Image (cartoon, rainbow, N blue to C red; front, top):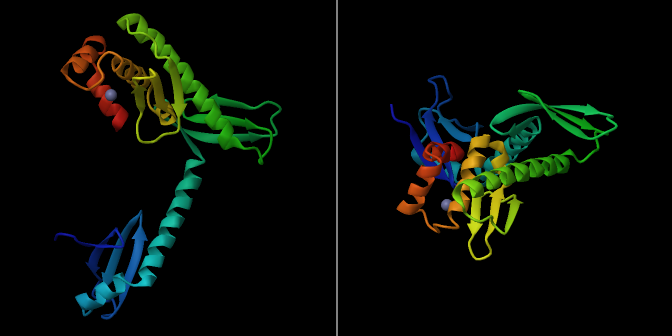
Length: 227
Ligand SMILES: [Zn+2]
């Protein structure tokens, strides 16, 4: 049986006939993992379903359940930290005399002075420094191996629309802070990719030949980065 779906207020809703014991005139809408499912009794007309779906009540329900889902995702995120291809559980130690972050294989320990401490900012600053350090390391490596000149400036930003970008006029390289979530090989690859743009502005054949010559696994790394 193929699923029947309709779009309401920009969201996809799956229509499912209810179980035989569902009251024949009943319509019920629920949200599960960000999806909407409408079940209905046997004798509910299409017209009644569409009127129900386009009502203010349904719109409010969608807004409310998405807000709740976002809140849940938020609290889940607070207990996980993605770092260089690993997902680490966050353990907090309060009352520490010195701020610290210690990474284990699958766990990261945060040593904080108190529960009121702004840990989000502290973590962000830590991750920024780590990414800057790694990007510098690979700039050293690739400028040495390729003979391409260093970029004039490197900036870690919180942009989400790209992993890295080279501004050719100013020779400024920007990398997204999200890159620190990826495996170190991805950072290695991205730095080479961006430096290559100083010689080959577009993604033409010469650009790819250059990448293939210096980093034969670059295509797999590009896929890994985007996955
Ligand atoms: Zn590019």
